[in-house]
Length: 307
Image (tube, rainbow, N blue to C red; front, side, top):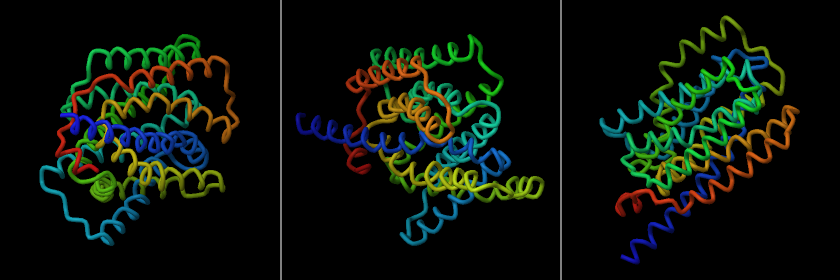
């Protein structure tokens, strides 16, 4: 029993570290998207980045001669593609035309709670009561910050952002489950390859209608969301979810809004208020408390395969 407990603890710790790498990678997504949509059409940014990443994914799958997923795994991969390849990138790109990246980052701060809910439905996890209390506390801090920052009101673009949250939560939970069977990088690679054929037409139409005229900063933003946000960041993220559990590792996303705000200040010149720093401190405290909140463990055979 002690040996099994030690294995779970080790896997959980590794999962948190991999998850943190993923969160840091994703924290630049909104600022980079905002840079890109300043010159490029949102469809080109939101879906075109998946086509670029799909080319990289296809090449990696071919070089490594990765076996094809089973029929049941393909169904799950389609959900991953719908959530993180199509839904989140497109909806967030539309929103970034209308609100600052810092504001969008805070709205997306409810993603950990949404991911925990999705982990119950898709990954079969059972978080404890303490876990749910801490999750709700974290979400309350984030929502309170949004309302205070927006003068007590949500903005129209928040609807797109909340849709992006729902899409990402589904893709994260399903991807974390599949990563226990396929491996973290294989999940995002197969999801990208599956989605690519249906993305070609809308991206081509957007390019035809709006062109590809953009400055260096816009192309830099597009390159980041294509190669890191849509590809490399998921290698660490899905591996972390598989090792540490979707719900627990997903709580690290509470840090993402504030990392994004720091990036927005550095890249876009957006300001950081004392209220932002206070909210960030509260969220970091909640994440630390949630580290030991119980979540039903993943079977040892599954953890061994994920490692």
